[in-house]
Length: 270
Length: 311
Image (cartoon, rainbow over all chains, first blue to last red; front, side, top):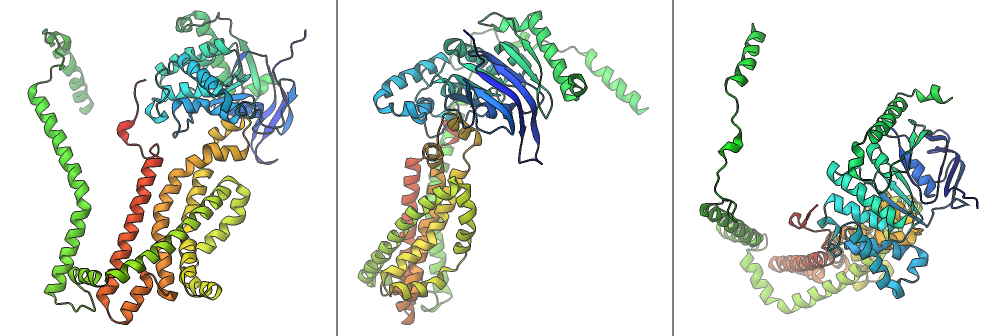
């Protein structure tokens, strides 16, 4: 039984606005296994978000190949869930109806919406309960705090059981207490559903807490500089972040990022 | 010298008197359910609430007070300066004229209301459709927008004679002018609402396999509703403007026609009566639009007090 990686990015180049535009990715290669939790970190503007949009097929790569689930990505995937720094909930819908959105949009699910609505709603309620939003199903998004909105946004990204979950700095706009709460919420969601996750973040502790493997990108034009496995048992607890293993890992990542920001990686890599 | 003085100031101040721990001064008596608030505090609160209520009542009355005040000034001014009726009739004279010509005023007002509403309905249909098209497709936007702007800048007065040549004198030119003058704000606003969907939200939906039409239906259209209703308030008043304009230039009925006939007979009070009736109709329609707006899109007009519960 050969296990092929779920996501394969092979020598991808990405340049915006034609040949004269900004080079965002330079000869980037990476793989992500099925059900793996991978975090991508790097200095700001290094093409992390670009990488994410390439994997989901929202933008085409300028060169190189992107393969997801054994198929070349040449159009937007219909199996991915996404969450961003901005929760982007629809203000005219209740929390429950916001989480129901994927069931109305994904073609195969929408076809059965009329028949299976009760079932879908049940799934939404279960997920909302898992992230601690029980009792808020019929609230409007603007009645919720930022952290609660982000929980709902995670539910919307996961409710249709996507095989691939793309998170672009989902907790970037939250205060540090709320953020660390949501790390555990996200970990629980992942342990319960086990999607393949690519988390883009600039928070090294967040990456170390959540990911199986951390990829560090160079400054723009970005490429993967190093990768680190995180050997901590699951479920991880906030206490683990005080262990010397965790601290050393974050310190090590920090040094690589600093070097990446100074552009020293050019000489180092070639 | 100076730095020395600063240095002494700095060193002098802190050590002379160590700050007492504030906890030592805390009262030892148990905290009551009112958290130590006194009766006088509650009384003051009640007074603040009552003052706020009085203020709100006054705010509701304010527009009527302003209108009454303006009419009074007008009435007094007209009498004191003895302004002739054919220059500026006093409000009471206008009211008498309305009473005297009640039947023709009502029938003409209804005619104007009809043409306006038909034109306005047409503007809604075309405005929405065009707005969705322009807002959801950059291709249509680039192709059509310059033309729309050019068209909107044409003075509609110039179009009325052409419309009369095409459709003949009567209701039709008024309906069309009302339509032409009011579809543009609707189009522009709906397009703006659809075109400004957050890119992240678009990505979320596209990654779920949503095609553009579905994104417009699920997000673009509901999102543009506040813009749409805002434009209705502009559109309904310009709709009246359009139909009365056409009636004035080439009409056989309607408030605009009535006003032209009255002014040709130097019956200035009746002209003013027409103005008053038009304003009343316009304000009524505007109010209806506002009520529909607050009923249907309460999520967009929420007040600050509704926000944020818990963590």
